[in-house]
Length: 249
Image (cartoon, rainbow, N blue to C red; front, side):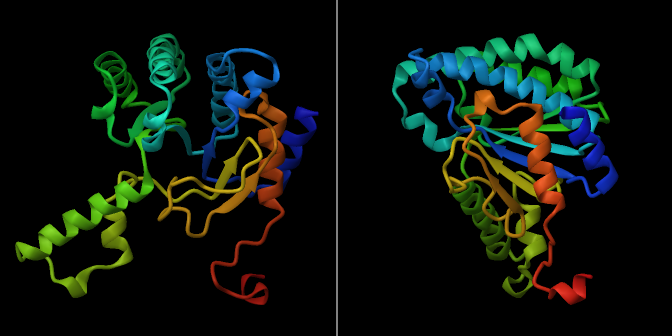
């Protein structure tokens, strides 16, 4: 099936440049199998590995994964501690493979919120892969889009107060330049697994014209065929950006 889906995608030709994914359903996947919640996060790593590989093979430029939100700090402390240990173990295990496959790792969010060891491991991973030219893998860690926007607006207001900018100069481009994603194209396709139909404070500004794809599959079950089907669904849509169908055609 995967070969046929890949053939269809390549023949269509309109492959998204940037895919963003809300990786939801790890805990519910584990609960459905009478396993502890951390088992869902562990199995979810296998999905991450496979999706990263497929995106690289399809020559998708950017992949952003909503890894840990700013709101996730409100979860039980024992779960947070287990997730941070898993994050540390995963980055240490996977970074050489990412480097070998020419993947460039970067982070959006407040990395300073992370415990010292996973924070340092992330910094080392970013430095080790910074010169790679293949897939840009962006992990959203301790990330919240509203907070990102507030920080951007404060920086702009500070520039206005200091006379470095006039209020009438504020534009979409100025706001975009103050975001974590200033050097990243907006997502073409945003996928959410787990059956929910919301974007949960993820890339609010950047997703103004992003195509949304929601699936009932829990993240640990989201693998190659599911990703390819999401891309095919995207290819069958007409992106009008405020224009009429006739104008786009």
